Amino acid sequence: MHSFGFRANAVLTFGITILALICAMASISDNFNSPRPSSEIQILNINWFQKQPHGNDEIEDFQVWDVVPICLFSPIDATAAMVSLTMNITADLQSLFTWNTKQVFVFVAAEYETPKNALNQVSLWDAIIPAKEHAKFWVQTANKYRFVDQGSNLRGKDFNLTLHWHVMPKTGKMFANKLVIPGYRLPEEYR
Image 1 (tube, rainbow, N blue to C red):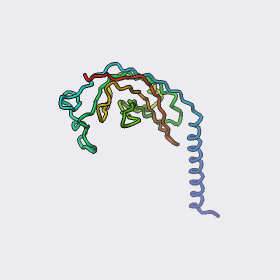
Image 2 (cartoon, rainbow, N blue to C red):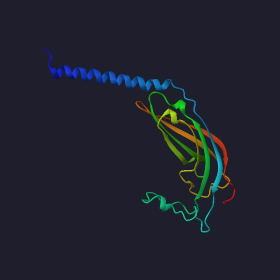
Image 3 (cartoon, rainbow, N blue to C red):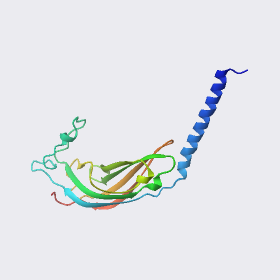
Image 4 (spheres, helix red, strand yellow):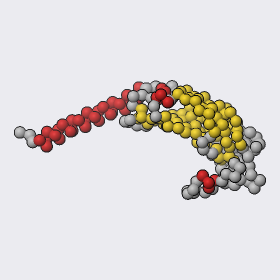
C-alpha cells in the first residue's frame, strides 16, 4: 500500500494544480473585459509661472533641496521653468474593475515636445483607487508634483494632459493604458 507521505504528496500536488488552473482562468478572463473609462481635466488657474531675477525659477522662498533631502540627481538647471496649476479632474474608471482587479494606480501627466526631446512627461498628480466604489471621482487640486522643464521651454508651450492608469490584478499580468486630453497652452510670459 501507499504510505501517508505518498498520499499527502498526491493531494497537495492535485490542490496546487487546481489552484494554478483557477489562477490561469482568472488571468485569461480579464482579456474579455473591454473597459471604456472616461475623464475630463480642466485647468482652473495657473497659480504661478515666474523666474527669479538671477535665473532660477521657484515659488517664493521654496528651494529644490527642501523637497529632496538626499539629492540623487543634479539640482534643477538655472534656466528651469516651473509651473503650478489648479485642476479639476473628473474620471469614471469603474469599467477597469473586474472581479480580478486588486487596485488601479492612476496619474495625470503633462506631455509636450521640445527641440531637445520628442516627448517630455511630467507627473502632476496621482492616486491609488482600491475599489470600484471609489473609481468614479472628482478632484480639485493643485499639482501634487512640480511641473518643471530643464530649460526655458515652457513659455507659450502647447501641452496635453494625459490620464494614465495601471490595473493591478489579484492574479495575472498588470496592464496599462492612457487617455490623452489635448489643447492646453501655457502663457507667453512669466508671472
